Image 1 (cartoon, chains in turn brown, yellow):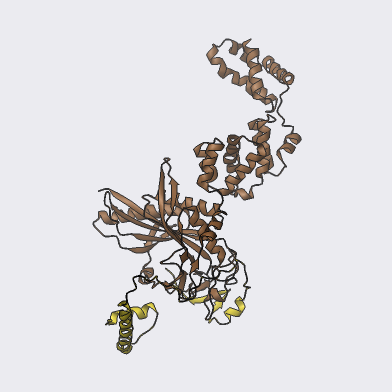
Image 2 (cartoon, chains in turn cyan, brown):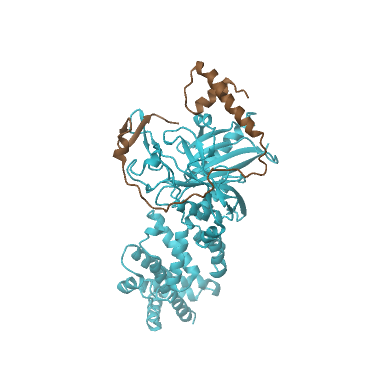
Length: 482
Length: 95
């Protein structure tokens, strides 16, 4: 029997606001435990939540970016459950009237096929605190700094049918929230994490199978591994004639397996009701339109522009625009170089990316600025240096030796274009290697192209890489063939 | 409308209330009365009426995104039965 996988994702995105969603406490990551947890976050009696306008604006931006409906009237609700990192005994979330509903996200798969994934809804809610199980003996430590941090939870339709699609969708949402600058998207710090609903059905079946929900996956790689593992587990159960149980499971990356979290199941009766402490949020058409004017150019639009206006390939455009910082860097370098999109793209995706990877740096930490790289490309373009010499110059810039022009000057790397000087080098090489010249002249025409490489190499070596290769080639073939 | 004992026990569990066996009949009677009232309200035709999320017909006032709270950890933790290294301590909870 052949099986079909059905996946839906719930992505939690921490919004990059300075203060919490319902209180004026700071949201900065890494502060000392409980130093950013105020009376509202602690759920002390008598406190009242007041909504952060930036959180509302961020959610609206996301909704507009995926072409969703923005609710003119949305309501916060209490989701009731007991857990030590949730001091109030309820999480303020949205239930019946979320701020964003509908919308679509286009993903591109490895074979170039595009697929549209529908978003069911995106709602605002507060994050919970953190439980620390180590270091407190037989007790658990509770840090409520994260309690009240604004989140949007983005719920997709169950429309993905492989781990690859799920990862592509998650990456696309990640790119979007970074472009919109509504989240730092930092997965190690938990700013971007997801739950995956996975079910299996016989191929051709139209109704959905029983699903398992895998909680709190915080890397693209783990999403892929967790889904693949869960699919196998469910197929094994079904093939042995068993039944998948609807439950919450936790992915353990160390063991690469998922295991049941039964306690969460018992509590799964959340008794949502509208939070009486909070009035409904009303958004007029004018307010929504004003937010729309603040939207930046989005990745899909930028990719099309790179293809159309800069004549870059689909592959290059996709790679450059997948990350906003890289796309911004590329465009600044391009403007410093005064054109040559393909050459700039090669340098950004080639030499620069390799150096960043090697030292595990973000592009914002690059010792070579976009302007510096643009200047280097400019010197390749105007024939001051060859592409090979430029690699040396890049290394020197990376190591902090200054800008391209300074390094070219200091190291004397300027390309030799004086035909008299080049001719002298060519003559020297010819007279130093009589045997090879003999061999060249005795070879048939079609083999000469290959043999000339030896002489080019010798001339380049003598000039320490500075001779203009086109000129060298031309002079050599004139003299050797003549 | 009647409600059975197991429902009473479930509701008590969800609210983390510990009910004695002896309390159940009284709770059953009280809850049934509440449900009777709801039942009575359910007979009203609300077809043309929009659901109400809040009795006050005004929109939420939003606050600017500014940090206005300072660190008062020491003050708050005076109320806690047990703290260590800045953390509130609770019985071990682990999945």
